Length: 125
Image (cartoon, rainbow, N blue to C red; front, side, top):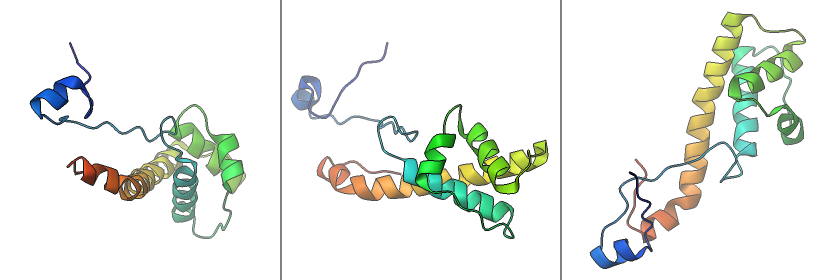
């Protein structure tokens, strides 16, 4: 059975223990990651095809979000290339997105949260 212990809970305060793990939600439920998603999607499609300068603003990306990152990149690819992707292209494009999104999102939100982490003597590894 898992027990939730927050830094301010009575159990933590009484024992002086700190939480062992922090869980990050990077899909927009807890953090506004739309800009990170749009940036990663635009970088991924530009890296996939440097000859196609099409970029999508946050409003366009917001309309394409839903059903997961692979479907997002399928929609981005189709809008950018004016055709449906082949499986190999989709695999490559999705991988490019994942690499850029995870790094970008962790970097942005870690730097915004580092003061809060420092106050609680927590580190992001």
